[in-house]
Image (cartoon, rainbow, N blue to C red; front, side):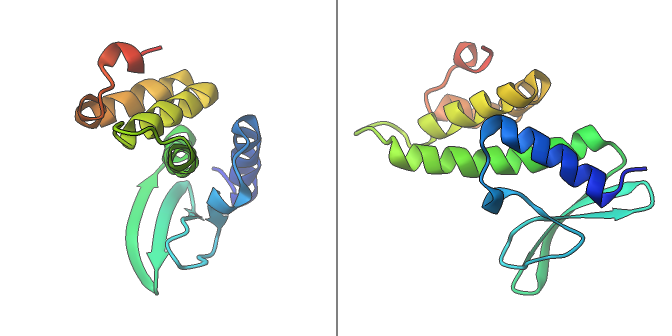
Amino acid sequence: MHTLGAIKERVDQLAAQIGAPAGVLPTYGRSEDMARPHIEVSGSAMAWVVVERGKEWERKTTLQLDELLFWIFDHVTHEMASRFAARHQKEGQDFRHPLFTKQLELMGTLEPRWRTRLAGELGPLLRQAGLCSTNTES
């Protein structure tokens, strides 16, 4: 069984590895609303929850810490990569190219398995953004 404190400690360790700003990390045990994700624990179940304007938009539940961490850092790295891509746009280049490249790089820094999984989940979008599979496997 994982506690909110133990989950937060592990998230903070991983976040430090990639320099994640505190504002993109989830909250724990309570919602700030405004679509900032939060983490809940009930017995051995851990949940990723997104609430906006008082309405729950997303809830995913797992018994596996690795799965929860993947969900958290999929979000965190996407936020970081979006900010990176906005600052590094090139004329005529699909905005998603630097976004996905940076997100995959960040996920790979944290856990190579997560990078591979994310690349698989993003497959068609990566091809549309001009990123072939050889660029996503390194």
